[in-house]
Length: 621
Ligand code: UGB
Image (cartoon, rainbow, N blue to C red; front, side, top):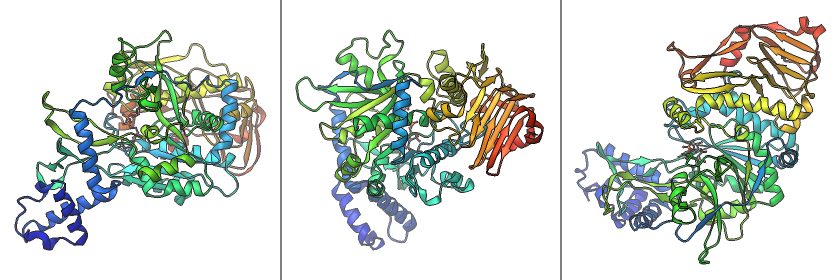
C-alpha cells in the first residue's frame, strides 16, 4: 500500500485490474518506498508494455489463458468431432503449361500485392548467432535472404505495378531481431527499396504462466521482472491490425497480401502461380504447399469436416505433432504414413500464404488479429495441476482460416516438385545430418544453398531446353551427401518468372560443365548463345543496359565448393560445411545503359579477368 505513490494514474488502473485478476503475488512483499523503487518501476513499465501489445490488454490475455489452460487440463481435443481428409486444391507441375499460364495471371495480380516477411524468430534450431535474414542465400553472389526478397519484390513492381505504385513490404521483427534487421537494411541502403516502402513491426513477447489459474510468472532471480516468451508468428495478424497497415493497403487499392518465412530462397518461384490460383478461384486464403514426407516436421493441410453437422468444414494446417494422433483416432490406424507415391497424402504447409485483403481487413477489425491461440503446458504428472516449467499462449499465422466465416474460400496450391519451391534453412548441422540419415529433407544451410543452384539449373532445362551435365558432381558437406548442380544464379531482376526466363534464354543456348558457375544479374541480359561455360562467368548489367550474350566460350579455372576439413572458417561457412575458393572469374560488368553484344569476336574488349573483384562482390553484404 505504501508504494501507491510510485504509481501514476495509468499504473493504478492496471494494478487494480491485475489485483482483480488474482495477480496479487506480483506486488506482495514489496519493500517500503525508497527501497528498490527503480526495480518496481521497471516491473510496472514491463506490465504496461505487455498490456499495450496484446489485443484487449493483459486482462484479455489472462482470461484467454485460463480458458485454454482449462481445456488443456480437461483434455479437450481441438479437433474433437472433426474427421480429416485430403483437401482439394491446385496441384501443379513446375514449368508445366498450366503453371506458366497461372504464373502469367499471378504476375498481373502481383502489381496489386503487399508482402509480409515474418522474421521475429531467432532460429535457435539452426544455431546461428546472427539474424537469419542476413545469411547469404547462396555464396556465389553472396546475396542475403533479405536482399533477395527485396530484389524479388522490386522486380515484380517494375513489371506489374501501375505507374507510381510501390509494392509495400512489412517485416515482423522481435526483440531478438529488430535492431539487427534495421541495421542490415540501413547498411545496404534498403537493398534498393525506398526507406518508407518498408515497415518494421516489432512483436512483443507474452507473459509466462505458472499454473492453471494463469498466474503470471516472475523470474526466479529477479522478483521485479516477469518471465516472457515469444507468442509465435501468428502475432503478425495482430500487428497488421493494430498498426492499421492492412487497412491502408486495402484503401490504397491493393488486393492481396503475401506472407513468407525468413529463409526460403525459392519462395518467389512459386508465389506467382499461387497468386494466379488465388485470383482464378477468388480465394480468401491460399497456402502454398509441397509434397510432404509422413512425420516430416512441417504442418499438413487437411480438410476437417464434422459428420455430426456440429460445425462448418475447415481447410486448415494441422501441425505435424497433431496430425498423427488425429489420423489414428479417426480414419487411419497407421497414423501419418506415406502412400504409394512415397509421400503423405496431405500436402505440406510451408507457411507462404496469399490472403485476399478485402476479406482479411474486416476479419482483422472483428478479431483485432487475435486469430487463434493455443497452449502447450508440460505437466509434472497426470493430475495436470503443476507445470514442469512456466508456459505461455502461442499462435500461428496459418491458423487464419479459423477466423473466417463459414463459406469462405480457402484453398492451397501444391507444386509437385519440392526442389522448385521449398528449401528453408532451419536445422543445425548435427540435426540436419541426422535427418539425412533418416532419408528426410535436411532443411539445412547446406541444402538451402545447393537447392538454389538446382532449381535454377532445372528451370533452365525446363523452359529453355538447356542440357545439364551428366553425370552431375556429388559431394559430402557436413555429413550430407548430395548431387551438386552447376552453380547457376539467376537474379530476380534478370527473370522473376519462368515465363520471362523462357523469353530471355534462347532454347538450347547454354552449355555448362559440371563444376561451372554462371551468375546472371540484370534486367536487360539475354542469352542468344551458344554460351559455353567451363569455369566461372559473372554478368552484371544495370537497368537500361541491354546485353546480348553469345556466341561466347568461357574457359577458366573457376570456383570450387570445398568441404571444410577442420580449417578456420566463418560461422556462415561452418553451418554449410563448405567454403568457396575463387580461382579465376570472367566478369562482364555493364554499369552504363546502352546496347551491348558480347560475342566471341568482342571478347577481348569486354572481358575483365578479376578473381579478387568477384570475391569482393560476393563478400559485399
Ligand atoms: N517467427 C516469428 O516471426 N515470430 C515467432 O515468434 C516465431 C517465428 P519457424 P515453425 O515451413 O517448415 C512453421 O520456427 O513455427 C517466424 C509452420 O508452423 O522456422 O516451427 C520465423 O522467423 C509449420 O506448419 O517454423 O513451423 C520464421 O520466419 C511449417 O510450415 C517463421 O516464423 C514450418 O514452418 C517460421 O518459424 C515449415
